[in-house]
Image (cartoon, rainbow, N blue to C red; front, top):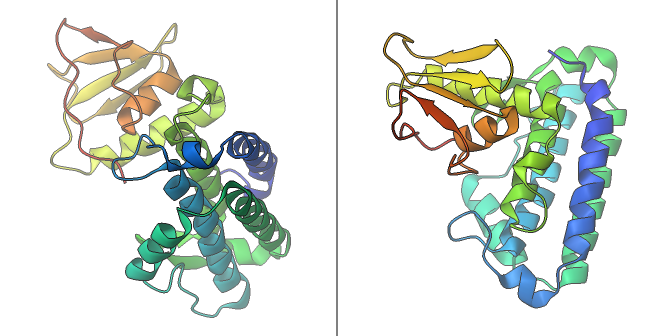
Length: 237
């Protein structure tokens, strides 16, 4: 697993890009729909701020050994997002910036042994060392969900490859996932989901493959061999 402290530079850069996008929205643009069904851009930005605070809770649990839940409850999380979604642009931007700062401060406060702890995330136990990657993933993927000028093609190769492998590994454990072979453009490396025999091979850039697997692209630029339609994917996260 990548040293979480080494990923903080990427988190900071991704957060700066997100803040620039958020600063460009007026009230009408914040109220416009995002790529997530039923959520406006205001919902997405509020979720990202509350996600940062939830991850601070998990870092606190890892550092202190106390049981600190990520959120008080799923109902409380949903209510906070719904309530915050309709705030004016300056309130969104301030909340997003302050919550990102709190996350960075919590990471900086972690003693090295605390990264070996296991904490209770929203979907179950996870190693504290995975929290920084989780934040990077949230910022990068939900930035795309804002349906602004940031696309999956803007993801770095390293991020796209890691996301692709993570989503594919999750599909491998699901009975409703189709068998397929994912191959990167111009590379021999491939990722296999299920039994590869007779499974279609899907080829394209790593970022487009990752975005398709994560439900952030319809995959229209991907090539399928033998010729045919892309497999139907179960919902990710």
